[in-house]
Length: 198
Image 1 (cartoon, rainbow, N blue to C red):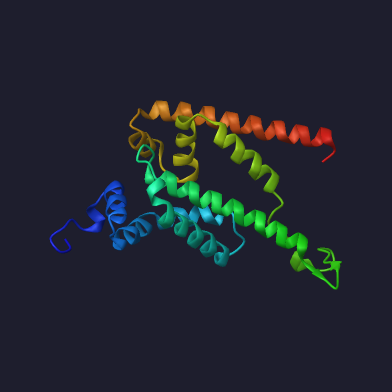
Image 2 (cartoon, rainbow, N blue to C red):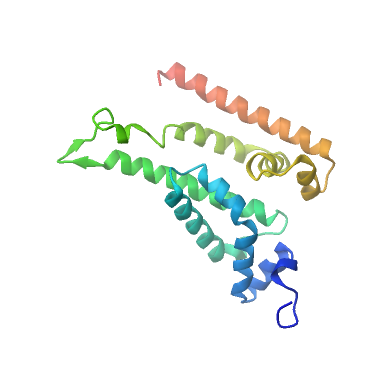
């Protein structure tokens, strides 16, 4: 208990959001502490090292602090935060790719063959990431949420079902449909790319 009020750890995400919007900065700290481990996990998918992870996380949390008023409680706060991290990570990958294109010495492009350190291209799968992201956005909200809760956040089927307020079987079928739609989108993009000669 702090000053006769409920401790941050005992408050729900919604209560913490309301407290933060009401001017309590400690509430945002509590939100970050509660969700940080899973947010780090998501940020790592878009980064080459821990510095990138921290950059993505800090930028996403800055956006969260500035845009908390846009959060709607129909969706879980964890889902909203994860989407911010995913969007920030995606922007980070795009910026990294642009920097890689623009790097030059005496107006000559650096060749990965000439320098093994540069042979790793962190943006090699960017096209696939874009396809997956677009397909994810096109999914019905219930399917997308089932997929994110289990495959991105890492909840068990039972935990995801409790979070969504449905039976585990419903979550499984929603997730299966979402995964099938994503696979179809990726396969379709790969087929289109090969026909285009890419």
